Image (tube, rainbow, N blue to C red):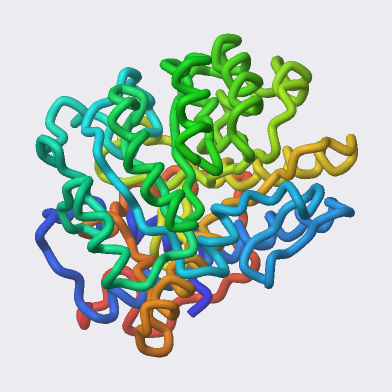
Length: 374
């Protein structure tokens, strides 16, 4: 069903007014999926045209795209997309900054703790002394990642755990906004055996202090890079500090396509949105900014890899993880993060006169506004 933009707007305006708990009828659901498919197809066509302008574009087994030297591609991403995935290790339940793109926006003071002396690994609570037991029973993952909020709030607790996984030969990477990093704790991380450190440079607006910390981290940690949701604010800040950032000697820039959930979507209402494979919902400008940055990096011959960590990459990640876990054919953990589709979020793009569907057809009988059978 190649629904027209006009008909999609009419229907989504109606759906947006329904009570949140009201379920749509099957034919109404068909209309929703048809409209989402039309929006996604138009966004995909735009992105394909942008990608075609990147002469040095490379693929990692068809699962993601990047530009730059193969040796600088982050090993953590290889583990995520080709290996046994990434086992998430969580400890901290706090953060020292409040980013509008954060998936926990508005609830940072209500994040439950993991527990005194406890670590969450694979959804299970462990004490530090349990790690040896875990490694003796379950197959080692190709990589683990220290995720969730800001580990540097209590980074000294991480050193012995990092040592334990390092001794087991498991690749480890850790995320930080970089504002609390110092030469002392960066050295300690390197000595403990951390393989890779990723700075969310957008969290500080590309602050000079954080850029300096990236340079310092390169002295102690094998792979250091940036991983930040691509937003107009970060793109502009990066342009202003581009040379200083590149001069740090960083290895990679992971351009994460911003996807939204019920916590942070309110910060982006009014933006043009699309939904990728009926899963992640994103502003259409996020992936476009990534492609613009990749084109610039390729044309100017930047040393670091610039990696397209898009919704498509996340889709591939989910398929790879489930396959490595022995899941059934087609199994994935990729899914929509909203309890129901937020119809109102798509009204701006449907009202945007500069955004066009690729092809349109009249709705068939039984699907038109006012048809009694709906």
